[in-house]
Image 1 (tube, rainbow, N blue to C red):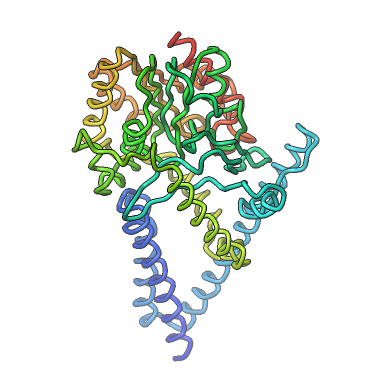
Image 2: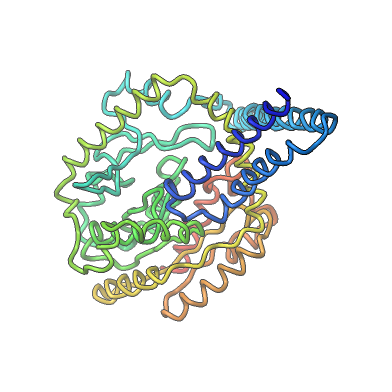
Length: 428
């Protein structure tokens, strides 16, 4: 009897915790944008609830077998999790040591922030701010900004006067040959200047190039950035699209303040004249986060308990056959507004499409099909498309060389170089 009740309670708690976690991540954190992904977790939760019910009707022997299988499964999953936490880093460390002679930086972001802060008090971690009063898109201005580590070292850059990843002198220019907008791939994730796409394009074209890319932004955030910061005189707007922009926009259009950028042609927050306030608020946020991280030594253990790396690996497996959600109608409204800006400035718009890692490595047919349909709609707007998958990755014998250690992540230096050279070739 005790075994029956104990097993039922354990199964129920597993199902209940997974259900709560899935609801929070799907409906609160992602605002419904990733429901298809979390459907798997709902089914797992339902599976545990069904097992709870079945447990009352099975024999003691079957129940014992089930307990053995259940414990063995848990042991297997956590063994995989421990392996994924240790072995890939060992592989990357060996590879990095072999290629550079340096040791792979194993510190987390806040550990390196703490270390560098002792040397230079102006060091910050990239962040932005969103509250009832203001929503920023860029980071703290004129500061050494720690970004991310996928290549063995933490990338960093000295931000410009508005918190973007540009040399300080760029904003002094009266005319820009290139303005780039996009997410983390344009922001310059995990590589140092001058090896991000914008810097490479700036150097090979020998022209004024402005980078307005910011991580974790989708089409509506990027449109808001253009309304706030786009210079008056420019020749080419390079809009870089990544397939997760579809999901980003689903979340963004539920944000009333962001939506105002689209429905009210005259709306902006005058962020250019609020940088001091933005700097203060972001620095306050960073300090709060740092204290939380500093006081919480259990982060890595919690990630292991949550089977974080195992779940991420399963995500990439499922992503091979995952379809993209349809691009929302608001995207084409944004496109129309951007085209008006382009026409007004007698400029040109180039729509650059970057592929996902699964498209490159696994030739994901479903996503390729979705992108093909998406391209047809863009072409109807008479906009020039630069499809980097077709023009770069599909022509390479080993295209995953463009990713850190040939693993999922942002493009490495070689990948950025190839994309920047292609943009220059097709826009000069």
